[in-house]
Amino acid sequence: HSTARRVWTRTNTLRLPPRESPRALARTRARPTPRTRSRQPGVFCQVEDFIWGRNWTASLLEMSAYTMSSALGTVVNARAGRVARRRASASVQCHASFRPTRVNSGFHAAPRVVPSVTSMARHQKALRPCSVPSWHPEADVSSLDPDEPTPGFASIESALVDVAAGKFVVVLDDEDRENEGDLIGAADKMTPESMHFMIRHSSGLVCVSVDNETADQLNLPLMVSNKENEDAMRTAFTVSVDLKTAKTGISAGERAATIARLGHPSAVAEDFVRPGHVFPLRYREGGVLKRTGHTEAAMDLARMAGCGLAGVLCEIVKDSDGSMARLPDLKLFAEKHDLKLVLISDMVRYRRKREVLVERTASARVPTEHGNFTAVSYKSKVDGIEHVAFVFGDSADAAAGENMLVRVHSECLTGDIFRSARCDCGNQLDMAMKKVAADGRGVIVYLRGQEGRGIGLGHKLMAYNLQDEGRDTVQANEDLGLPVDSREYGVGASILNDLGVRTIKLMTNNPAKYHGLKGFGLTIVSRVPLFAPITLDNAKYIETKRKKMGHMFQNESEEFENAARGVDDPVKSDQGSDSITVA
Image (cartoon, rainbow, N blue to C red; front, side, top):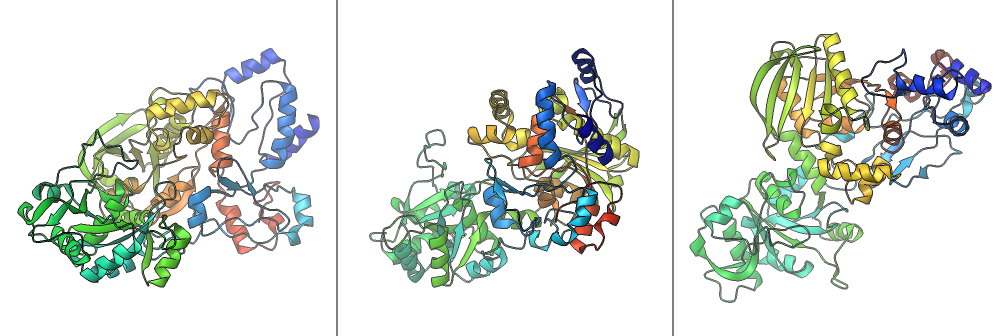
């Protein structure tokens, strides 16, 4: 214990509680330390402090492990499993002698190596300059631009050119969804030749995506009601149709004529007979921003390409056995037939950059304990959810400008309103408002409808029960079959753009918000960390965010900048600390 105390005192990073009796230690835990004040009970250390356990033996064992792993402020190189493997453009490089290890959550974490000043000096030659992670403020984020496609896929812009020219594109959805590729084109561009190609290489069940207004106009009711729809993806099939002039309706030429008519703006209900051999689908308003399905992708591509408001689609199957074609097969197929291969997720990013997702509805002065703010309400054009921005000052115009202090905060009813000690959300919101008030300018964007990182209040409470049984916050979501984090920040970026914010100092510990806000006309000039107090109730939650979700609890900007430049004298550049960011 004495040796560990000397080590931690020297690092000036961690601080152990004094040697006290269990009763005195309990009193220490029951009140805030002089370093922090909090309304939450049981606060006994800051986030950068060592989490002192309930008994001394366990604490000493935990202390030994924690010293080697994270006590000296190293950086976790965590990347989300499936998504990050597609999109990561940069990562921290570790010692050549260390290999990344897999953790159960589906994330990758690099082992943490934390040499002291003396050992660091001895091993300078063994360190390699690290590349700056793509989410870091000093990183080159050109690859994160919404116009840039995921590596290995075509750009949305190039796909739109082909759709406008009457060609098909191959569109792939997420591997956690259907994990299939569809041939998609504009309905009003269909010809007998293109129809024959689609039938030859697909399942043959050719569908046409139309919006609700067109479906109503053409008298295309749902095949079954939404309540009776038992399809896994709840695809909105309408009654099937043929063109009235068709003889059998099944030939390539007659199906092409039916589809082309469905996409024509002058089409009327009397042009078709029901049932038939073409299957219209009702498009969800909001498109891929609301539902990331091929139905919405087909309509969005046709609309963005300047064609009629209808898209044709059909699933691609293997020629060998008729089974569904997956990504490796789809890549070969696209190359063989000179077709663009695009992702629906890239379409989402493309649309978010170009379209205004919210409309301002009202504003009013709101006095708070932190000072006077102007609350500005917004309504999402995608799903109708209302959000709010709190601008410090007496007018919303105060948000316009450069280097604005900004917090994009996801709704947390339990933490923000009822002061739950299970998370750090309420404390972070309070701290952000205090920082904005102290700075004299800034914006708090409060995004509603993102409870529990997007899973909803009921599911969050279910996850709490699993956490009480020993699961962490990531495992609990996965056990429920829910995404670890399904939040999106395009709406927040639209709100900031509407307020006139251009460059921001982002208050966050979450690297995903860099992905979510960059590329929407916003420039993040720096990150401002929020050190919420750790309690016995939220310690595991915060540690899980740090280990498995890549959250950062210190400002590593200078360390990453030095490492990226490959400084000649890392000891000199880090005189104030006994630790470095490992390259």
